[in-house]
Each structure stands twice: as C-alpha cells, then as structure tokens.
Picture (cartoon, helix red, strand yellow):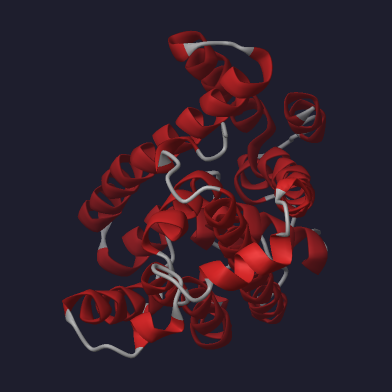
Length: 286
C-alpha cells in the first residue's frame, strides 16, 4: 500500500523544486503527520520499547527530552527560518551562507548520518516482514529497501509526505491495539500493573535516590532537549507555506510525539507485568 500510494503521489512532477519540497500546498494536518513519522521512525517502537522495558523510569525520564526538543524547535527556531523557506535542502542553505565547501561538508555529513538511520528502518521493516510473512534475513531486507527506494526516488517529497501520513495512521492504530491485546491477555491486569509500579525498574523511588544512574538519566534528558534539525526534519519545514504554518505543525507534532512515547511506555509496563524476564530484543515478536 505504501508503494502504491508513493508512486501515485509522485505522478506529474514537472520541476525539481516540486520533486524536492512539493508545491507548498500541504495542509497543516498532513505536514504534522509527516513531521511525526519523520521524527519517530520505526526505531521508536522497536528500540524504545526494549529500553523502556529494561531500564524503566530512568530512561522514561530521559526520553522526555525528545518531545521537548521538538517543541523548542517549533516555538523558537522555526519562526526564525523565514529566509530559508526558498531553499531546497539544508545543504543548499548552508552553502549559500558559508560557501561551496561547507555545502559539500553538509551534504556528505547528512548522507553518512542518515544512512545509519535508514539502515535501522530497513532492519525494522525486515523484522516485521519476517514476523508477518515469514520472509527471512537478507530477503526481507531487500524487499524493505526496494519498496522505500522506489517510492522515494520516483515520487519525491510529495510521495514521502503522503506515505508518512499513511505510516502515521498505521502507527497510531497499531500501538493502542497491541496494548489492548496485551492487557486482555493479562490475568488480573490492573493488580499486576499496580504491583509492577512498586518494583524496579518502574518504582517512583528510583527517581528519589541521587546516584550515578539518575545522574546519567538527567544528562541524557538535557542532551535530548538540545534543539536539532536533521536533513529530513529541515526539509519538512521547507515544505511549509510559511513559518507560521511550520511552527504550528511542529508544535502539534511535539504534543502527539509525547502521547506516542507514553503509549510505548504503557506497552512496556504491560509486557513487564506479564513477564519480567523476556528477551528485550524480541518484544515485538513476543
């Protein structure tokens, strides 16, 4: 479905500007959904779930920095980006400000950084294909990579944005449904969750003892709050009509990202209540 939507959305592209940032006619809701899908990624489910399950409240505290980062970006940075909205990429913007050498450095750095992120996405999709269809190893990775590369290459920004909306809707439905299924499979679920909330790693007392673990958690919180705009997030802002639409979309996205994080936390607590000795790398499979 993602492949079909992506290729259909990319028809009738008549200029590289429209290919790169679209025609700036996206609604705020569509732009918000695209920012959320870009910000969360598939790793938010697989790796955040595993880490919340293993480290409990300490990592949950640190993860609060992620939506705060997005909120700060939207309210403070985005509104000052008016002069950037005519560019097609972060590389072009940096090049215009600091010269061709910086443009090349920005482009190469972006490619290297985003390659690691994309490889995680391919791995996540491959794991899902393996779970649902039984496609194994390299075959699943090839299928995942082929789908993403095809619609991104041929459809440009519009294809990526509309598939982001599709993925956002899927994610929004998937997490609550899975949480409900786990809840239904827990005997005496309410009592089990109440017990879990009094024990490590989810006990509130964990946040009242100042030690190296809590210090590390606060350090991570402060690090994640630092505002940042990677190439993909920067491009989503370039797709806005103006800085006011961009600020509104990023602000809405921050609120929904917070809710998404809480849902993943809730799912981790339910899984822990059901079985505290699971392999954290295979929670989705379980």
